[in-house]
Length: 322
Picture 1: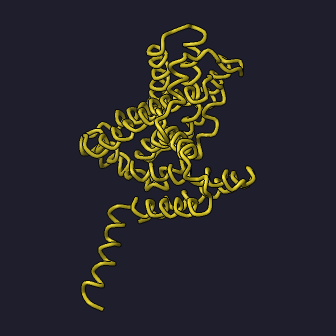
Picture 2: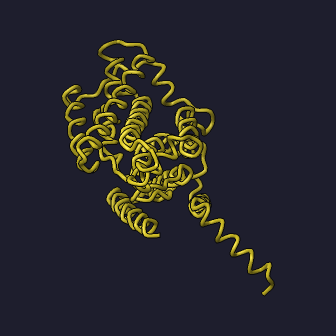
Picture 3: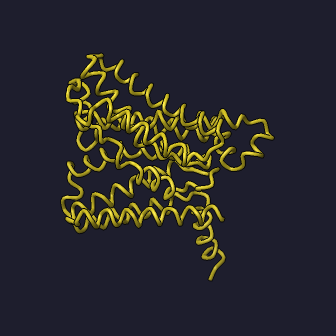
């Protein structure tokens, strides 16, 4: 075999090591090709719109968890906080009659405040974020049920309803929110001091502190960012559903955890990938859509998602060891 023939596979392997998301992209493309070849409805404009809508919501949920995984922690309250922000957003329009911009600010403020509480309690008490956010998950859900009395808010402003279901061909309007957020998150992680400090704290807190990084400040800001992203996802869910459903966020944990880890996040912290997380969300969205088109029993869907989490955890352990 010629030197060139040996060099090319090595170059490919080197590229895969530098860009872990290339393998995910290949899996995604293969999945799309397989579904397009076996299910004629898969490439219909409506089905693509459905998948992109699901992606628009799920990617914000996944990013909300990803910023916490970056510091080597886990946020179990993503769904609870996003759901609380959703009902505050909806209730501000329905009960208080606030204009849409003020309702958005109210929902976002709840997300940021909830994240601030998570961050301060985690840092000041020294408790594991898993325990702290498990407790705040219950608190946020309790406040949610108390405010709504387990009943939806129906008085959603017409512009919000329109935005939640508007589309241009196969492209949902929701992408106008999630798209820029994804780009901004990538830029912050890759190009800003905060992004570098975030990964430094996740990689080694003691070394980061010795280097002059304010570890407590970074942990608190990471949780605030997580809360803000969860709040945005909750408000987009209200726009999509056209009501403030108190169950919003109840099923977010799987995608919030699995997508970032599949996308390259190391459970011990210090390494995450925005591109990889987006591809992880896309793969999970593709799997869900494929199971619906193939008319697979919902029980089997939950079973597969459970195995997906185990796979994601195993993958994270391998990356941590490496």
